[in-house]
Amino acid sequence: MYLPNPSDLANWDASPHLAPPELLAQSPKSWIAVAELDILCEEGKRYGGQLEALGVATEVQIIPGSTHSILVLDGALRLGRKLVLDAAEALAEAFGSTLGKEDRWPELDRHV
Image (cartoon, rainbow, N blue to C red; front, side, top):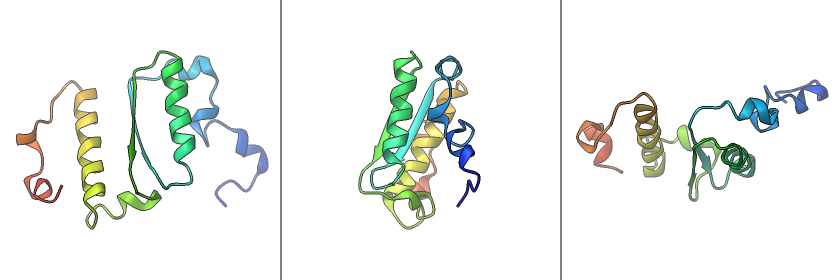
């Protein structure tokens, strides 16, 4: 549906795990979250494994029992809220900052 041209299916712009190893090796430290029940879960885990094998510091977080729509449901599911907070913490760390418990959004912490 998203790639009507069959030749685009092998393009790494469409799926990063298809990128050449020399390009993947230049990736920055990576944090990858995948939903356990997402059809793309295995692809996300494989991508994280490729980065790790190339020496890129990588953390792969699997959100148990969740589907591809977890971020759409972040207001309804505790796991979605936790994912948003975990992503914010990973970004803060990547930019040389910290996002401690005291800095988290208190209205979300009550529900996580």
